[in-house]
Image (cartoon, rainbow, N blue to C red; front, side, top):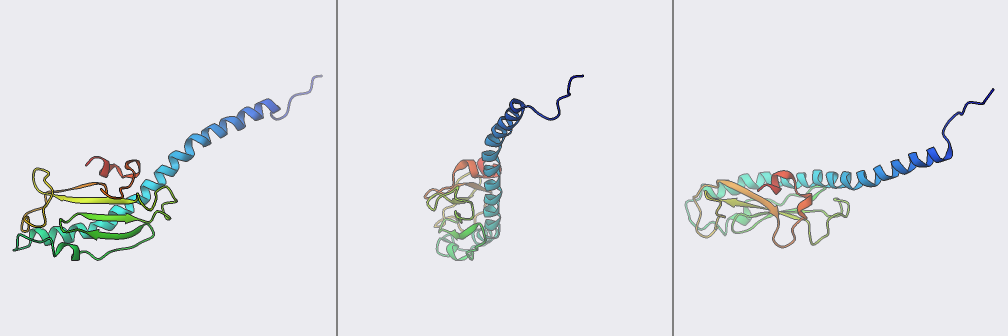
Length: 160
């Protein structure tokens, strides 16, 4: 009477290990990018309070020149993933991420997101002349100086 085989042969085991290795090699980078994008989303959440403050400062100003007041409307916030939040004289909010908390996928020179206030017609606000005007929308994207890589931006930032 022939013996029945119990378990896997060596070649079958090697094939299973190779398939698992290939799947792991494909899945790990995709998961790492997904995890970084989730952390970058917190950077955008940190800017929400500043967006409200900038909107209020520009639209309720009686003076056309609000460029001097805008940098003071928002307190810089820090968190595990956010190093600082700043506002310039035109109301552009820059959120700088903590590249160490983002697991080294960003560098100290490429870890910022900029939110630009826009008037109707997608014209950026000019802090020197647009006080008292309404902000129609915000443009989100990598900062001009040390912008975060586009692949890490949330989909709401990539579309604008």
